[in-house]
Image 1 (cartoon, protein in one colour):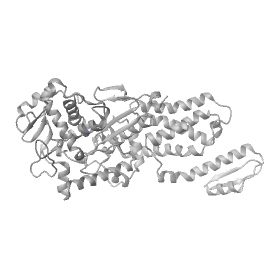
Image 2: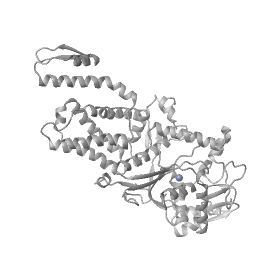
Image 3: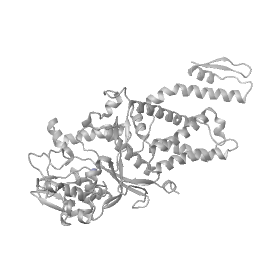
Image 4: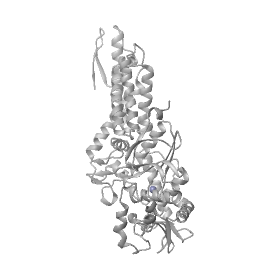
Length: 503
Ligand SMILES: [Zn+2]
């Protein structure tokens, strides 16, 4: 029985607003698309949270044994300032400000984005397509939408006809917006620009006023609308129907609503079966955003060089901090929360480091009850992860396992009573969930500060064993040296009794 059959995944589907059992389109496979960054500036921590949330989701599907195709795009054209249909392209604007080619801006911030992803141990997707690399596919997509009667051309630009689409579909099915109301509210604004209705959105824009980025098309020399790339690229790499589409909460409307409309307008199918949305990172209750002046760059976070930071925090501390909440809840950023996360992270990794130092299990009479208890702690971690990827609850189970590991380290007799198979299962998945699913790794600083204490503890355990099994023991030179290195002074070693002090 595979892990995914043993621990079937349920997830909250933003489309139905319900928690549902995950049923993939193709058994044993997961196709997932996540909206990637618009590469016109440095990534801030709020963006990192979204990508980390989906990183853990993808990692968990893989760990359960699914074959995953993960597509996360790079938006390098078409995203206009203010997320609207008119105005300057974000990348072109930045290129003008920095006096660079638009593609130099794209490369610079794509590289920076990848550096940040690596820093937080966020794995790369299987495919990372760019909007500019898929102009042909986007043009073909628009042609089909026009053929189906859901888009119209006006002066070289093409717009999606929301009113027409809404006659036979439900524009608003994802965001829960009442489009009839929106349509009647916007009626008097109609005809003020090229669009027939203000709710309509651009599929193709004619390049005007020195627009730097443009391509030939049947309608004009121009560029694709922002929403279009995700429809065209998800269809190309995952098919007209695929499993999961993810992104930040702020993309639900209009971006994702428009994507569904484009997909149905083109292919009569809405793309993903499950829509998932990660929640925001807030600072003192306000959304973390560059425009609010409260968006840390990862560098500021590591160095502590920001007015809201008391000091710097490591990348793994921050990763752990984000794991301590459910992806769909808001997470409030504070120095106190980060310091608590740092303690938690170090505590968990200290137990992790002890695993390789433990002796064998199952060397005496087996205590079945306690062996099964231990095994069920790891199963709880699986059940919590399979329950809408609840990393916060899974961590609680892992801490329970961690405290057992600490006990076994101090008292190996208790480990000797554990069933060997159960213990192997617990060790394998304790390590696996921490490193492969949660993506945590030892940081040099954390292991360095603990190593002296760990050394001293292992010597003490040696001594205790020694004292237990032999009445007339003699300390070997090796043990003497180890003790000295660990700062332990033996005061009296005669007659099977001893005392010691630790420096
Ligand atoms: Zn998108």
